[in-house]
Length: 300
Length: 321
Image (tube, rainbow over all chains, first blue to last red; front, side):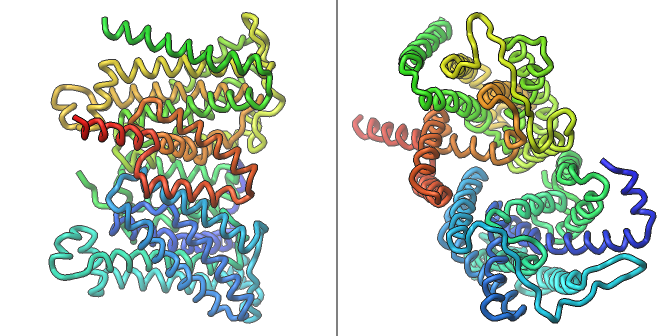
């Protein structure tokens, strides 16, 4: 613990700028993963423990596509759409069989998927740490604001993730599709009776969640090491976000993801060994005081 | 009178099992057999204690390893401090995990289903983080180093692999008999009622909170004993004991064997350990094989192996009559 260093950082503008930008970037990337997780839980009632695995696959797909084409856009598209396809296959052939069964079943099926995919990744890409290169266009000197250093790629990440967050909020809140999805979450039987194909809605939601996880994996490939099993830590953080924000709530996920992002960036200065403990402490407090989460509606 | 009889019957069966298993293992003197016996006792006890929560009470805990690891650390630290005999340290470590389970359980058992699972997970990871960051006491990431002293007591020297195997088997059997008595007692019947119909249980005047908490503490205490054995086995304690993967493996073992049959978790533990050893020997793609087996089991049978066998047998009986 080094709380003195933390308070001196809070007092200096340069350190504050650096940490806030890092926290925002971590938080928004986390939001992409966690929003899919919370959406899938809210609509399908499924706790997708394999969500981190989709994130990891996104990183690997992007890495391979970038190596083959050298185009950043192609890498991002490969990560996002490749994982969406994998997610849809997973949903159709495995997970749709266990909708409505208890959480123990869901845990075990997802655990099996994690074990299998981790091993397949090891066979295809090897077990070593990999990293995706950045295209030349993104290799700019870091931006300096008030003495604080912000890597150029962080600004790009911030732009992309913030755009998606807004698009997601608009799509779920204002479009016809968003309304249908929300209705299906509350009463799938009634929605089905109105002539809407709920199985297709469920698959689409799972596809969108997978796409977001894959995109987050692709975006993070240049800044984090890509390795089999990389999905686990992001899965745990996404769970914390989902629980703190309220399971099923996208706006709650955004608030919680930023909270976790800042905990990570400032915690690495003040209590580096206890950052994970701090996140779980927050999760435990939320569960004890308001189990439905910060933005969740309380249920009986 | 019936309970007294079944109590004697259980002890008799356990004693016979002990003689049938432990004595040949002792006489054979093959170290891999001793090794397996100790690991079977450790994980069997962990799985059996967890099933008191999952199978009997209907509480799915993702954080059971918290008590496993705490037992291991408490025992290791007590023995390293010197001045403790092994039996006294075992009892103290179990008492410590019981108190810890009481504290965590008081907060957790009020929540239901998924929230209970997540809160137990959160507390487990919190303890894991505490162990990692409290380096001066626990050795942090490296684990509890320097070995755990095992002074002989009553002619038992736990430094000897054969003695340790016998002692672990003994602890497992005593615990299994105790757990069976608990499950079959009126208290156990109340727990099953809480699982199947909590509203009805509350209506007839049972305190859901107190019964669930009692089950949580009992399960935690036995997991603590499993942790003590683990600490004796590896002569130390490591943060992975408290990590969520350990809880995940315990759930895996239970599901392999079955949750509705009392001895299901023990069968699951045996299958898990044998599979683990075999697969590691045959192929390096351990996860691929384990994952596929799990997938077939969960999606195909939709229950544990013993559950499946027992249900199939009952169905045949019914057809006959």
